[in-house]
Length: 464
Image (cartoon, rainbow, N blue to C red):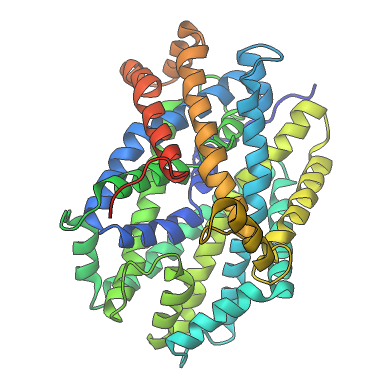
């Protein structure tokens, strides 16, 4: 067997892992769920959830990968035994990579299309209805969706095929600094806007008036879990390219901090624009693709800022897509002995074709409205889902929570205590945190993940 590749440096791993965590969830989802849930109090709860749920699972994933020096399936086999039921958690991670990237690349394609629109002149002169129509037309256009989906997958494959140091790490060193530079440029522009002070107050002042504690807390808990790329095998895979004495505690905390900072910076970019132009922060999923373009259309130099923002969104999507594809590719390299070029092209083509139904979900065919009608018969009226929504629901509400729960239970209860303690303390100055980490993984994390899981599938409900 060929010698396993490793990161060229600790910073290379941190940038790659941060790139995996920083994605559409930070720049698209976090701002709109913060806006929907009242701002500051939601941010505070979210930060607590990152510390007590997100970071312990991330450390667990990196521990598994670094200890076994293998991709998810092989890692669980190495730390348990051949044929163990725990291998199912590894298989789930590989399956997640295929499912999530197939529709994630479609959303990334929308960002690419908005870059194209920005280059053409942006949204100057468009009213709200016109901008909303732009997105609706895009969602329904089969040719455009497939074109951008294919282009984004070609970009992702082109990076992953280069390997760990010359592909993933090299591009992480390019994309992540560029992402930060673009974010800072947008933030400077936002600080000059009339709505910046209001945005800061909204984001950092805890206001419990009319706050729905139950749903908002579980929303924060779920997003804290998902934003760090947990439960999908990405951190196990990236951790497997670390050396045995690399510090998993410090690197995990650094990645978590970078991910959180980007999410908060995204809010400080978006909300000043929203408040300056008299829009609602709780605009929902349309905040980025509808509300922001309306504001860009009214701003001086709006086309430039639009180009910068959607470029930022594309970079963030690309860094996450790289990690998802690497999970799938590493499986075939480790388990089947395939070469990296062949594994990458094979996985890329499978994901590309698997994503075509998601790209067609805005139409009236089998993958669009007809599938909505079909799923309504199973899920009930008003709950129908097209192919895109179904894959998103499957991954977000079932696969990721189960994967995260499996990782927490495996590390806390299945891995031998001596091996776990030695692995946690190797190369770190924060060995005293070990028993706190184990306690969180054994008791707090499972309760949190199960609560999110039950809420997301409708078992737990709250009165309005």
